[in-house]
Amino acid sequence: MIHEVDEALRLLLVDAGLEDSGVDLVFDAPTKDWSARRNAPTVSVFLYGIREDATRRRSGTSEEYDAEGLVTGRREPPRWFELTYLVTAWTNRPQDEHRLLSEVLRCLIRTRAMPARMLTGSLADLALTVEMEAASAGTGDRPSTVDVWSALGGELKAAIDVRVWAPLSGEVAPAGPPVTEGLLVRTAAAVDGEATDPGRRLRYEGPTAASGEGFAAERERRLPPGRRKRGGGAAQ
Image (cartoon, rainbow, N blue to C red):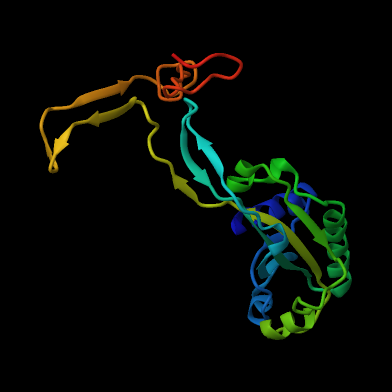
């Protein structure tokens, strides 16, 4: 799922014309060594945070079907995760970096949810809304930008925080094959635990539906001797 969110972000920025202007788009960590090797205008989209959004956790399962409409498995509900990215621009002059970062910001803030055409793999299969938020107010339970730069060993510079909420598809438990035979009951009389005759076999063919021949089909109910039916005389 993570690489599919990366691809959605890449397509979003490409659609805004980022690569057409000769800018490299990468997902590398913007460390000091990396920045020293850079030789072209670059936008780095660095993933630095992954955590589950527990408020969206659900229980239960949904059924998976094959082409013939038979149940093949039961899928757990998806788990939602918040992915946090640090987006930075790199050029030879701060003014050019700010101009490039402004173009990226304009593209990101006008997108509240990833367009369906940019979702691939499991994200496209689930067909759920993948929300995103750029340059939002920080919360106390997330690492600060200063902490991220300190961990990277680089110097603090202007950056855009981008958060994406994406589902991770649940596991599928295979279902057993459907019942295709009727219920079979064997009875046999026994003396001291040993059968005295082969006994009887009762077979009800087909599904046990009320309209069929199975155990669920409606049958006349006989009352014990001496019991009366409602509104009538004694049962015969």
